Amino acid sequence: MSDVGKTEAELIKNRVEKVEKLRKLKINPYPAKSGKEYSNSRIKEIYTELIASSQTITAVGRVMAVRGHGKLKFLDIVDQSGKLQIILKVDETKRDQKVVELIDTGDFVEVSGKVILSNSGEVSLLAKNIKILSKAIRPLPSLWHGIKDEETRYRKRYLDLLLNPELRDLFIKKAKFWQVIRDFLIERGFLEVETPVLETTTGGADANPFMTHHDALDIDVFLRISMGELWQKRLLVAGFDKTFEIGRQFRNEGISREHLQDYSQMEFYWGYANYDEAMRMVEELYKSIAKEVFGTTKFEINGFSVDISKKWQKLDYVTMIKRYLKIDVLKASDMELRNKIVKLRLEHRKSDTRGRMIDALWKSIRGTIAGPAFLVNHPVEVSPLAKRMEKNPKLTERYQIIVAGSELGNGYSELNDPIDQRERFLEQAEMREQGDSEAQMNDEDFVEALEYGMPPATGFGLSERLFAFLAGKSVRECQLFPLVKPAKPLNENTNLTKNTNSHKSG
Image 1 (tube, rainbow, N blue to C red):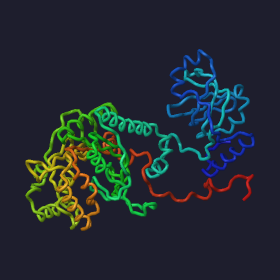
Image 2 (cartoon, rainbow, N blue to C red; image 1 turned 180 degrees about the vertical axis):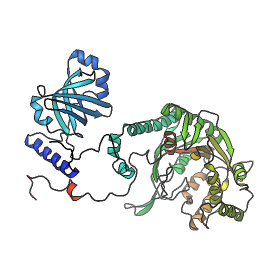
Image 3 (tube, one colour; image 1 turned 120 degrees about the vertical axis):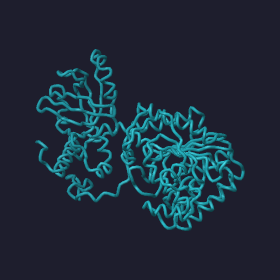
Image 4 (tube, one colour; image 1 turned 90 degrees about the horizontal axis):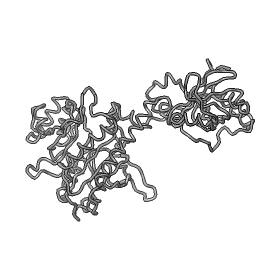
């Protein structure tokens, strides 16, 4: 009987009945093992050899299409490698004909038979035996229409990925993105490390942390807001010269096309080197990512044409603000900074510190810069962990990578003066007391580590925002399972936990 016109509840009921029919035939609709021998793509690669040998092989996959009726049917089964056509002839599958009649789109099946070319020349498997590996209870959305609602796509990401090959390819590319970075650093002598995700004091960034409770120790702890910056610097104290970490970090902030609260980041720390040396290596890294992951160095991002391969320019932080906004942030008073922010109608709070105001002014012009460029010579007020410049202590040896109007990387020569670091931490702690939840916490344990001596060093970090920009997607779209609000309870008529098995008592 055709499924056309049936409600989802009716389709589910029909499929549950098919599960019961399989069980009555003494067939397990969810066996633990399959006899897979080749991937679908491999079968197509060596089909001439398989046809010549006339051997029986076994393929597996999810049924994505069923065509034909009566004595001849065609199935399209799909595994991660691709699609394979299955030909079902009653004369060939007599023993399993009852199973064939119970197959729906969405089911996982195992098919044994011989490889042939169909009348249209398509590599196909002429089935001799067919077995259900997993019976799908819910019908799949239309393969042609997919899922249109964005929130539903994120909530049912497994279906979005199943129905959208381009989305699957995006995440294969994203895995390569991180692997290219990992290989690049390892080839240059960096050691991959793992540092704590739970911290008693957050550090390494200006961000509002998530907090939770550690029952065993009976203490409140924070989820890290950086990729172990202060821990990797402790490793420099401990004698490691080059380290990096790739992992998840968490910031309890707003959602936008460029921002998430739970995302992947890479940070490296390089002893006996400074930010000039790091900038040269980072530029090389970004060019490698563009070529090896995306196969190009030219991108269209947010209305900008960006060529990663060209020589990266250096932009002076103070000069850029002076040029665009007609204010010298090094010489202006706090009142002058605040008046400029008010005049420009920028988002701000009365409690904003000098550093916050300077940062707000810079961000108001950042969106006009195509890049790729290094933003350099940051005021010390916006760089609490960066080393001061010897020639001008009001500035720091810091750089940010600007591409298509956004920051896509941040690095600096690391502050290793424990006295200077303690003073900056205390300034940040005072900012927190005044209500700035993103100000850094005073980490006395880290300062004590610096007092034992840390070599001159440079550090750098980039997040998955770089991948999203180069891919031309939002960062949320580039996460496999982005966080969404809990779904409403299932309708009673489609709730699979409801007792629908007639042989079970209530």
